[in-house]
Image 1 (cartoon, helix red, strand yellow):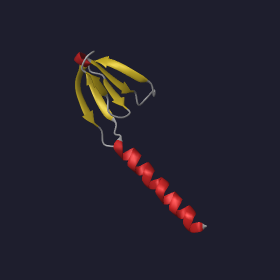
Image 2 (cartoon, rainbow, N blue to C red):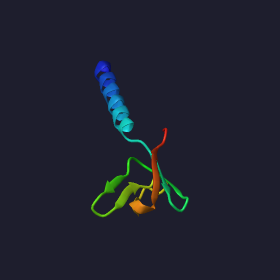
Image 3 (cartoon, helix red, strand yellow):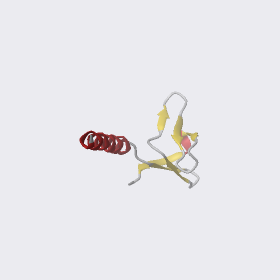
Image 4 (tube, helix red, strand yellow):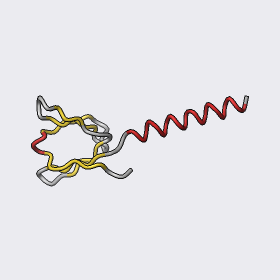
Length: 77
């Protein structure tokens, strides 16, 4: 019984590490000097020109015009 519990715990921990390793926070620097920290990688819609992202501070999904984004860079977590 302890072996099954240990195996299940190790599997869950490994799965958690794999999932958390796939996402990284990004910093969006805007043309007006603001820095927006995102939760995960922003998605760029080429048709509309909008960048969709999840704001790391508020947890809300937001959009910004791609013309207002000066730079996007990955943050070290």
